[in-house]
Length: 520
Image (cartoon, rainbow, N blue to C red; front, side, top):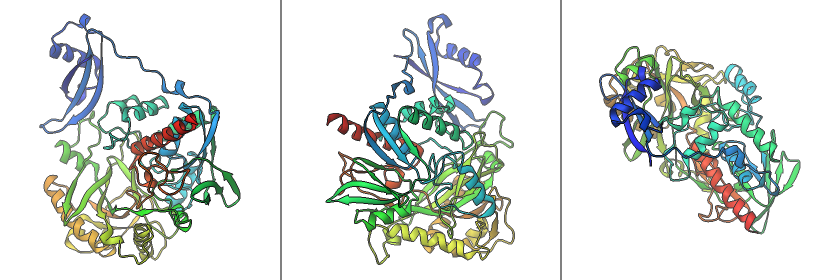
């Protein structure tokens, strides 16, 4: 067994392996020749002292050596067994496909959007020309919503699967090795596309199929058994096992399920704004440095509290990042955040949201499981319609003006390319959101001195934090509770929240199906 050593090292020395090894010898009290091997297994930042330090957790091998792991890609087999069909080429869909290939089962994937490179043109259209393609945007297309909105790999859902296994797979497909040791791993939207392409190439090389511009438009269900799906209103595809991994914004799929009398359930979600600060200010608050040391990354934060029984919290914080338009249909306005791998934008942004529960969306007259979807959609459309230019320009309000209930005379500089205009977000947002958000922000200002500043502004609307629907499934078989052959999966089904948990859920569902096929 390795001996675990914790070292605290200043940032300018943390990447100097010779220096780290010398410190290691001093701390362990051994000669260099007695150490067979050593490796850093976890890295984080300790900013509690006057000068931040890098905390390294190191495994030291004295009487043995690290176990040699088998290359993951070598475990994939040709898909010779009965095919499993997958709707959605996001992390849940692609990691489900890889797990099927581990077991020799052929995956056939249908993705409504375009391949990861072709998506770029549609992102440019929405950024610069306000044109929203409902099948190819920041949420839909190969790689899913996480591809062009940051690639964060941190998750609290560590009981749902093997986090290190997901990180190892991503590294083999081209992600930096740092993701296996960083406390909050991140790839960046500039690097993720090549990783996704490499995964696609392996799936296809092993006999799997991936069909783009292929939207699910109907289910054929007979006596509670899913028999087939219809793609693009044209092609009927017989299925035995269908993994439904559509992501959190596939409202047409939710409506289709309800129209087919397939049970779905409304689920709490969160709604609010993006808050944007100068990154230098966040660095100063968190590191107590201006400017921050060269070897320190852009500072991040995580904030949460309870106000009047509602959760108020930061979401998808993007240090050195950008705010992007995340609408999935014309006539709605949604924003999200992303960062490139270097996180070197002069702006820091984060979702700042309030939980939305049955007390808000349950007032809908039609209780069919889509109450939360309708509530979410209604607010997004109202925010869009407020701007008479019918563009993706977003309403903005200075942070202090929001707290004091006044219109901002000027907007702050922003990373949001479609632009912002001054508006009373405290009037546009639902009252429940405004009241709780104001109180939450005041609390956060006490925790982070300098956070409440005229240099910060709120930009709306952040509403796609998670799926507003859960598609119920059996805890053992993972099939839908009423429809045989249908396997709800990932974030869109309400069982994940982010790249990592979606990938793990994809693996879990695929493994269940593969075992069922093998045992037949």
